[in-house]
Image (cartoon, rainbow, N blue to C red; front, top):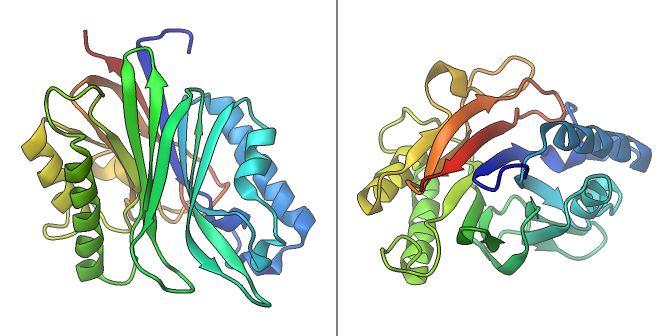
Amino acid sequence: MSDSDILRVLTLNIAHGRGLSTYQGFHSARGIERSLKRVSHLLNQVGADIVALQEVDEDSHWNRGIHLLDSIKAQTDYTHAYLGVHNRRSGKLPLAYGNGLLSHFPIVHAEHIAFGHASLGEKGFMCAELKTAQGILPVVNLHLDFRSRVRRIEQVERLIQFLDDKKYTEAGTPHLSPIVCGDFNSGSGKLGDAVRHLFSYLQDQCEYTLCPSGRKSRTFPSLLPVHGLDFVFVPPSYQVRSSEVLRSYVSDHRPVLVELKIRN
């Protein structure tokens, strides 16, 4: 960063590297690589310090066994990366994918949790502790179920239990309060759904800010977005300087970028 007090965070569902098509298995390896090149170009243009990605494959048949995070990292200037695989299947049609993180900050610890044991479509979250000039910053990157509101609430409760166990949101701990981001598969205005449920918990702990908000929060589908599904929860140690949904077509989701300033 040019200014050590400024932090730029981006979250994006890269849809298994398929771009705007409906199924990644329709693509050749060259097609997947072209899509990853577009994602990498976007990241190089934006220059975020932390990038949270969802639907990132480690070794899956449907995108020709390409390690998506390694490919993107090789085409950008990020020196630190972590992939939390929460969906793994062996056999003739292997699958291995989850949530990935790219960072300019060293990762001192990282772990991931799957919400269940399904062989296809399982969701989960990862948490990476980053060494910044202000201290250890936990970053949570999650992907919630798209079919069921009840299941999303159960998954958020799993995350809340994880945060409580880690004592990330308690005062007096030797780290900053966590940034939480990802694909929630629900809007911010729905009472009783995942975003509001998690926001209520985080505000009870300390005064979080939800980004983006209002009509400008729409991220899906990227060609003509009508749903806001992708969010960043910002702890009070940071002031939100800007929050925007980028007009981008590298995936069926549009990226969310927030620029933060550490509060002195």
